[in-house]
Image 1: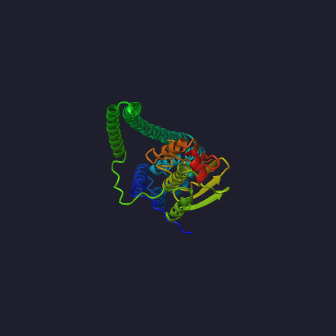
Image 2 (image 1 turned 30 degrees about the vertical axis):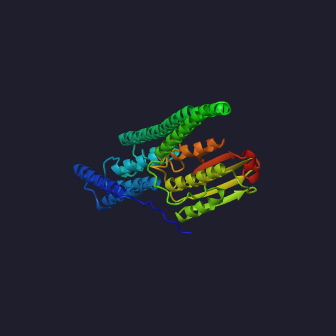
Image 3 (image 1 turned 60 degrees about the vertical axis):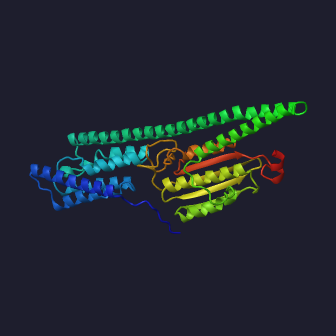
Length: 405
């Protein structure tokens, strides 16, 4: 099955960086070779330019690009006598690996960048002395800068998530205050007036009538204020031309899985256990969790596959969404789901990328149903979202609904 992705193999900025690095290395080697009295040969010049141009796909294949730059550097060393060097193309390739890959891969890349740029210089397999020391210092600076940027990105994403959570909490508190004012004042007044009208109905009809008039006015005011509050919450929405459709539930999962396939992601749905009706709120939560998880997978996992599993248990329902994470993540990598930015192909972040609201919204939906949500990267690569929702036996049937009434 062929799949398409909206993500290009490289961008204009990648091309500019690649051309700039190739030009800078070519110019730098040409000048130093002139000073040394050994003009740069055509094979060496060609290898330098080719090494710089490989940077155009450094975000897609960071380790492969670094290996190509190091190998072409050996070609430059053996093509003619050159001064000890640590070219700009090597700096960019090493920096990208440290930003984009796991710590083990980054450490190996940093160690490899010390001896390999000197292989073949002066006709020796591995020259020593000041050349290796200079390479080690340069590699340490590049790795340190990349690690510092990763740390800064993690802090930035954590701060964004924290600000998003604070904004949501503040909005909930504001709405709670508004509702408290409405309930505490108007509804309490209505209750008291209703009690007074009942007490005076037999012996003082006029007092009962006044109490009922006050009750009516208070109820009208409460309704008006609640409408205003709902208008604030729904500000910016288009007016509904037709009556709202029924809320989606587990029976609609096949539809969003099909939509995910049409969007280019290989997606499968598996249903285990005895299928039974669920309470509308639980069914809607199941649907929204799957919908959000698949949306995030398409955004951040690139050209990958996703698996959706819905399981009915006697007293609960579980839903799990996994992607294999073969695509790139946000920024240099996907980043951690809760805000990590160390950058690796198997790390997640959902975070946001969703502006911090995706996972927060899912957690709140599940918590409202008394359930739990797990969202984390998988050790073998990819990302997993799993929700566990308690459902009392018979809660979704007509008898169960009547019983709860």
